[in-house]
Length: 138
Image 1 (cartoon, helix red, strand yellow):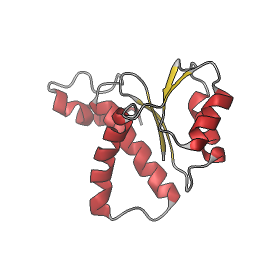
Image 2 (tube, rainbow, N blue to C red):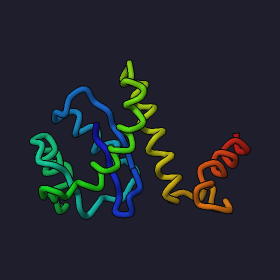
Image 3 (cartoon, rainbow, N blue to C red):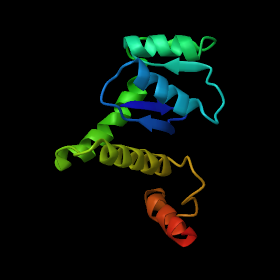
Image 4 (cartoon, rainbow, N blue to C red):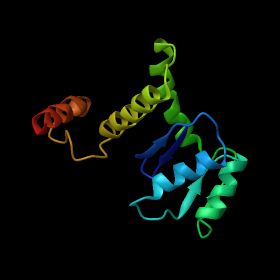
């Protein structure tokens, strides 16, 4: 699984792949960059496909691969794993993609990265207020 997070903790994009190889990394970065500004800094682990793809697609970007550099992203995986553990996994890649992207959306709502649910009386009611707004829009 590849996940892009901005400097404010907002999940930008999620991509699920069976393998962490060059084509998967290329697809992820192309999807993430489509319609967005080019990042100034990219933080990844030392996976060989990521090193190669970042050098090819983003040669002018600072690529940080320090040991604990991607802890923000890894910490966010903890909440996802806590949700998936009782479910005993997901059967198909399509189901996994939908659940993981939905989880990222709710995390972004909870953190206040969208204009949805801002009129909630309490911060913990933000997600409920956002879904009420979304239901009204549909």
